[in-house]
Image (tube, rainbow, N blue to C red; front, side):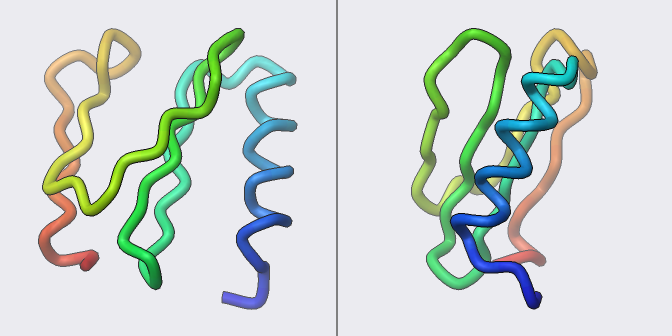
Length: 68
């Protein structure tokens, strides 16, 4: 809660640079999700209802209805 969005985005980029394969940055205030993957542009989703674990966490789905 004390970190601003810019700081969190920088941290996520650092995590990806250090080997993290998938990262979700959830912005509850704006109801946006930023998806981080190695060697790809950050994907921005507006108010998604779920997030998929893709091939990193097969079968995993995060329901965002209680987060929003």
